[in-house]
Length: 184
Image (tube, rainbow, N blue to C red; front, side, top):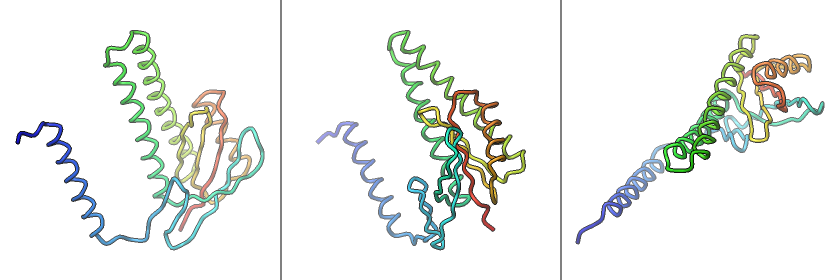
């Protein structure tokens, strides 16, 4: 019986999944897990409050955000989404699609890469203002979310961060600034 390449590849991948699943089940786990998407934290069963100030609204919203792991996980999640989008644009550029479609994909890829660079610069500018850490990312609806690690954040400080964001990213964005207390 001769197996096709696709069948061999599929069986290899399934075997790999089974082996990795068995390894995952057999390794002892820890309870220090933070769920970023759900914004829950199971590390020592505590939750920390964060405040959000929106540029278009002056109300304060309370949410929970975990510590350094959440910042790293959020950065990783954002980077993975951007890498996937860039890969999609690159695939369209490399395909035999119409020239207009390829040009549009190239422009969107360039805009996404430029946005990532602007957000990284803004994070560094915020850190240079004396904050411990910051994460900046733009959502699909032109809303910019800035999360700053600080003990507290006054309205004046939030407004200063919004001004910095407008300087770096340009006008026309709805900017939301949140803070996460520094854990000691």
